[in-house]
Length: 339
Image 1 (cartoon, rainbow, N blue to C red):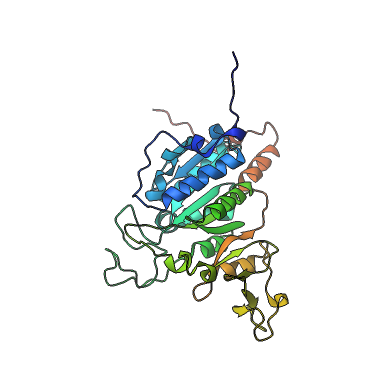
Image 2: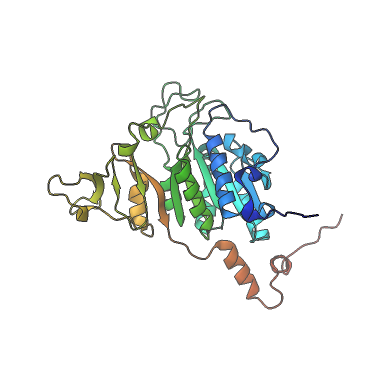
């Protein structure tokens, strides 16, 4: 009798799908994100028994149920804290945080800030639909001024949080952006995020068909996308447009970007900025672009350093005695409570 053993390297995207019924609204962008994550895992040969998906509360938080891996559905905004504990307990685990713009940037904003500045080796995937979907359409931290919702019937008066600008400001060393419907691009970004050693932050523009349909149509619509998006790639010129006839350059004498057209007003290819994903200042500029500028897609910033949990274990190992974090935590100033 011949026995065939399937290795992780041979797994298909469907092998990362659980037996649970996927329950998002028909047409929700979350389906596309789930498909992209499963495809990225298959292409990378991710070990299911060493992978954990952690979520908070919201539509995106259903994610762990739909992956044939380990998972935790935690409480609102606290997924980064739970994920940090998992990674510290076992640094060999591959840990993903799945969150939304409300869960991750409102009640969970403080946890998000600290997990990024600590540089814990996690893939943090933020679904941004600029609305609270699960609780029926209230405005969120990323909703634009003027957004009408059950909680802002006259229109929001608040200025929105830019997810990527927030991540860069918190000290993240890998920041990227993609779109739910850009499948090849999204899969490639997810694979880059997993390869990064340290906290990887990926914002995905995701459509909520029920409460905020077509909110990104001015960026993702087929007729406008060539002029409304700029796909950035390390060491490549920042060009966009249907025929790559437009580009970004620094305004002479200023630290500002401007859109220029090749072969107009003496503009040549030499005038166009070249993307350097290790340049935090450039990443801040790209993350901040708003219409009429194109929205930057791809890896905006990547400049790795030693991750938090590796430094914790290295510090523990430098102590006299066994390199046991549990022993180190308990060796002094502990109390025994006797009933």
